[in-house]
Length: 137
Image 1 (cartoon, rainbow, N blue to C red):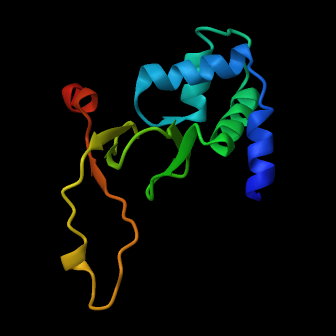
Image 2: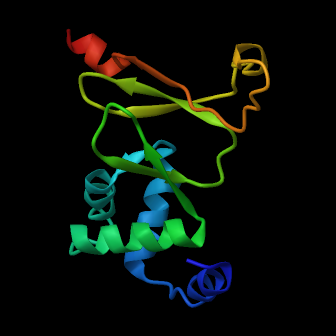
């Protein structure tokens, strides 16, 4: 989508109870969420909200730049998180598939790159078991 059209779509996005409920979910949770999780949490505020509505709103909020998509290599689902987060990486629980953020970055990519290679970006995913799943073992 070109920038002119994108900003036009962004400026005409009307405020709705459903979209407000979805925004509130991300302000409360502070972690990447699947559409199904967003729907379940938004239903606490707007009981009639459906998954199709959530998907449409998520798409619009991504296009508007309020949310970003998170694609974890080992998961089939796309997750969403607030776009206002700085550079960060993710912990991925192998049992419940919950994704948690961790801030900062200890990666010094320069020394890892082959000669002549310019690193433009990187992503780090740490896989393991979250505290809730570990407690249940």
